Structure formats: structure tokens, C-alpha cells
Amino acid sequence: MKTLPSGWKLFATLAALTLLMTAAVLVAQPPGADALRSAIRATARSSFALFLLTFLASSLVILMPGAGSRRLLRERRFLGLAFAFSHSVHGVLIYLYAQRFPELFWAGRSTVANLPGSLGYLFILLLTLTSFKTPMRLLGPRLWKGLHSSGTWLLAVVFCLSFYKRIPLGGWYPLAFALMFAAIAVKLIAKQAQRLRRASPSLSH
Picture 1 (tube, one colour):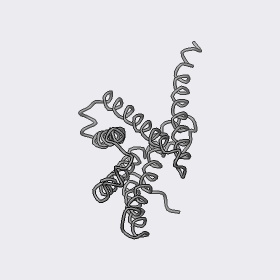
Picture 2: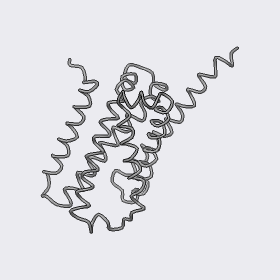
Picture 3: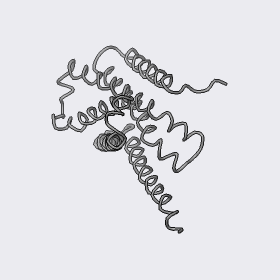
Picture 4: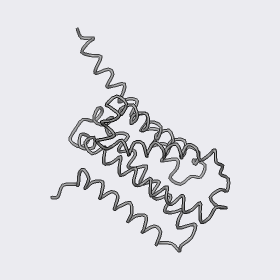
């Protein structure tokens, strides 16, 4: 039985699957606004799935220790880079949609409404650039950890707000919001469990 890819092979596999999925969605419909919207929704889902795995990796090791969760944590960097790739494809599709169909893109939308997403993309860029050794070394462990912790939390909030606003549309949005909300709860529970474990040795003395 072949083992699952890891490291850069895992990233390459996930990136290739993202491109294949996007191409399949685009060719499944006649060229136009509907095809682009479908591809935008598909890459939103792939990005969200990859983000959830990255966001929860350390928490699952704390709450559900085992070979699977430890491997997930080992691959977190490459899952995060695959998320950044998927969301970059998502961003390119949104740009194409806005350029080709501006009247549809801006219907019911304002520049202010785009700010959370734009801030999210800024942090995705920062997190991606600092996922390599030289920027990590230049930042130092403390700044690096602070940036990646605050950046992933900001992205979690952006996802949560984005899904919450779209709950009235139905479809997969209520489920996505519930999953993101639950992931945030799991993350907070894991942090509290970690604090209790660190405190328990000192309390026993």
C-alpha cells in the first residue's frame, strides 16, 4: 500500500488537484458568468477545507493525540501553503469575474464590504512569505509565532463573518458557518486544556 504524499509532494498534489477541479468546473458549463461563479464557489470550498486542517492541526494533537493528528501537525506548513495556493486561484477567479462582469460583481456590493477579504489576502501573503526559512530567521521565533497565530485567527474570523453573512442564501453556507464556529470552539478548548496541563504539575507540588 502506497503511503500518502508528504512535504512538497503533498503540496504539489493538492495544488494539482485544485487546478484540475477548477478546470473541470469551468469546462462543465458554457463560458460565462455562471461558470466563473461555480469555479469561485468550488475554490472557496477547497480553500476552506485546507484552512480547517491547518487551523486545527495543533488542537487535534492536544485533544486527540495519535499518529493521524501528529502527522497532520507535521504537514501543517504544506497544508497552509496549499490553502494559500487554492485561495490565490480563488482570488484570480474573482478578479476575472469582476473584470468581465462588473455589473454583476458590484451588484449589492460595496468597497467597504470587500475590506475583510482584502485584509485576509494580505495576511495570506504575509503568512506564505514567512513560511520559508530565511524570513522565519529574520523575524525570530517570537515575532514569527505572533504573526502566524494572529494571522490564522484573523482568517478564521474572516471566514466566519463571510459565511454568516451568506446564511440566508442557504446552500452550503449554514454548514460552513457551523463548521468554522465549531473549529474556533475546538481551538479555544484545546488552548484551555493545554493551560491546565501546564498548570497541573505546579499545582501538585
